[in-house]
Structures are given as C-alpha cells and as structure tokens.
Image 1 (cartoon, rainbow, N blue to C red):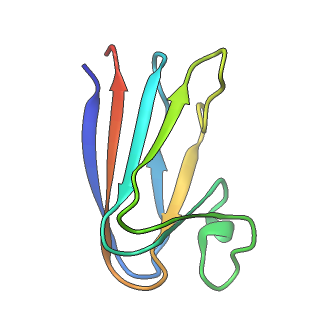
Image 2 (tube, rainbow, N blue to C red):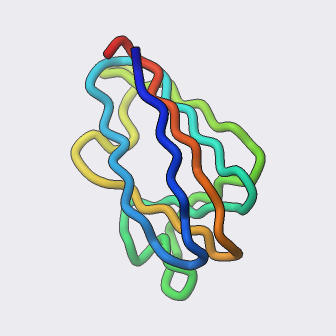
Length: 98
C-alpha cells in the first residue's frame, strides 16, 4: 500500500525525516518550490556548516529503488533536510507493499 507524506520545511531550519523502509519498494522525493539539501548528519545539512550534502533540485522528482539486494538510503537512522533559500514543501512517497 505505501504512504505519502508532505513535509513543510522552514527556510534554513534543518528537519530530520525517517526514510526507513519496511519492505522492498520505491522511494519518491519531490521538493516543490525550493532546492533542498539532504545529508546523513544535521551539521552537513546546515547552510552554515554543511559540507557533505546532496542537493535535490526544486520541481524534480527523485526515485530510489530500495531493497536488500540494491541497498537502502537510511534504514536505521534519520536523514536531514534543509531548504536554505526559502520555505518549501517536500513530498515523499513510500511505494511498497505495506
């Protein structure tokens, strides 16, 4: 069945999001109006101390295949998101069997 979540991100405020996946499936992420930084560490997602982060570009949908054979993004930890240039919404779709 899966689940769909929308997270409102406040400008330059790091937000922890649990991307743990119970079964194999697809994870879709869509930052709506602003670019978003994602990192495994809170400090790396910050606009002042961030070094090791990945930028998700606004308006782009990202799809990740997740399973034991392919690998997981963050099975046992939170991932950190930050919108350094303005408020935005991040849509997340967990498309799996549960």
